[in-house]
Amino acid sequence: MSISARLPNESPPAGERTPGVNDPGERERLMADFSIVYNGRHYEYDIYRYDHLADAVNYARLQRSKPSRDDEVRSMPSRERIEDPDESQRALMATLAITFQDGIYRLGAFRYDRLADAVTYARLQLQSPGPIRV
Image 1: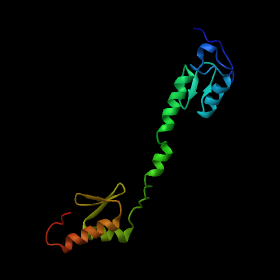
Image 2: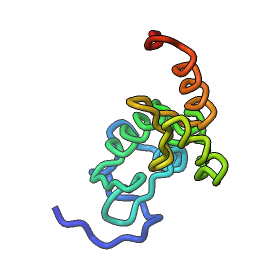
Image 3: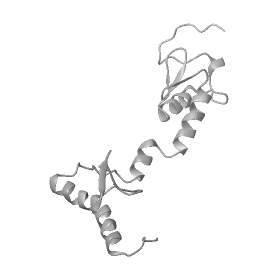
Image 4: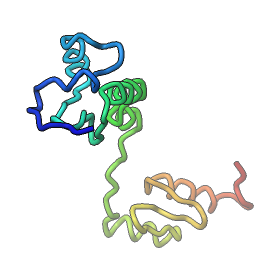
């Protein structure tokens, strides 16, 4: 099948229309609703190309039924910016055998996002005669 060059806003031939959608107004509505464009050769949705409008619409519907990437990002707590410990914090860390590497505080096998948590646990270990069990 040969496809002649058409302008992006021109309707494709009847054989390329979405099955059951013979009304050009309905075709245009679907394309507008789902941000689908026709470049004269393919229907484009997001970064994908489709030969048939029905395929593009179906994929767009599927994507809309899932949480968006923005929704996923918003639902996760934002990561705190962890600053390198200053000189006085490093001195305290040295007395408690706490290290800092790649934004993580470490005390033995344990990892902490916050220095205060590592210090609290280290002090509990010093006060306790045996290992602390959780």
